[in-house]
Amino acid sequence: MSWWAWLILGFVLAGAELMTDAAFYLVFAGAAAVCLGLLGLFGVTLPVWGQWIAFSVLALSSMVLFRRKCYDWLRGEVPEIRHAAVGAVVEVDDEIRPGARARVRLQGTEWNAVNVGSASIPRGAGAVVIEIDGVELRITAVSPDVAAR
Image (cartoon, rainbow, N blue to C red; front, side):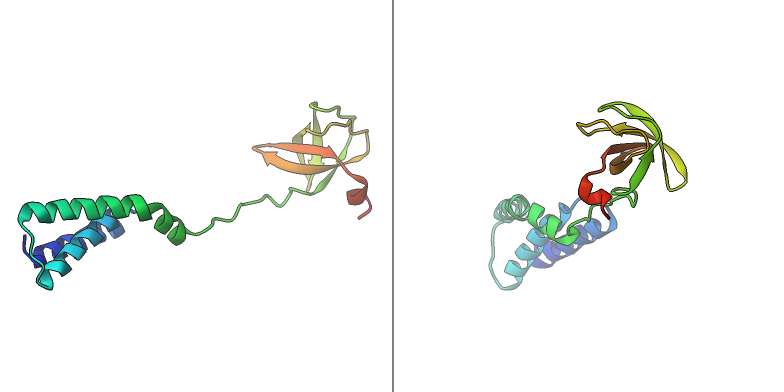
């Protein structure tokens, strides 16, 4: 293939990556095609079978070696989404033994709650929300340092 055909193929593959959600695969095939086009432009000639072998080796090796690193770098770190109620203190109307379920009020709404701690939560005591699983709160007894606040 001529050098300009490799350049066109490279830019088409890179453009296809932008137009679709190809998960960052086509960009490496496009870069390999552009590299072959630039080699041809600067006078390096290979037989057609050699061009296709070089294209395959460049595309596959760069994909295997660099795809995950580039994908993670471009995507960046996604911050964990934390519900505002995690860490809030709720009041318990009835005693809740470890692993038992009960209803508690949080921010004006009644929730199902599970005591995930190792100690019972006495009636009228506070409990801290550890996590939210769907419509259920995971709570544990308030430690003395949280109760002092």
